[in-house]
Length: 266
Image (tube, rainbow, N blue to C red):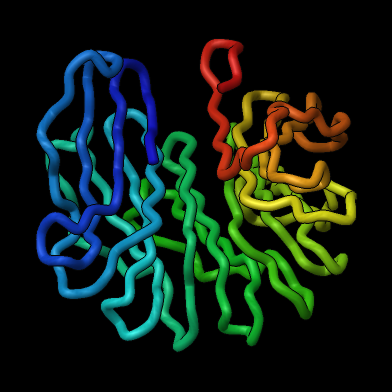
């Protein structure tokens, strides 16, 4: 995963070069990707560290991931306060006997927000927590979804005090993309809003937000094969435009990701 702030690019990935188990590595560029620093190993233990997500604000870089050093999957966090030169110790953010997995992180100034899916309730649900002091301390876990089927693979974006979350949900009999938001920096949350509506699977979504626009992409097999779709809201998630098909070929177009910079969406 990658985070960009000004000319500085931060990249985190999972790698098994060291001891046959997956660990997290990091590198950065300070000149818009022209040159790159050396690889830095971020995790060192006998467990598996996977599914990293990275976000940056000013000189602080935040990373979350899932790890099984505790005997089950838990969400871990670490940060750098000097643009990636040095890193804090690992911090365990979840603690239960079930799976806590696929975390994603976003940041605005000193407010850090994360979401993940969690099986502590007997089925996968989306959970959330936040830090208001750049990752020094964290709120308790907050459950965002509540239904008897699977809610998976949430992604999150924040602009100012508005926090946007999307995920895939099986409550309709097939996977559809759902959305909810907080307008007070994560204290209170709207009802779930269904964003897709077809008889096939809509999955693996990604979201990015600006002051008033929210952009999402996902993979969808309504056309008989996996294609990438897009939709947007121009009023901070209150209403949404129609689905737009972005790919058109006979092969699979999967696992899309979206980003924004200088009035351009990528």
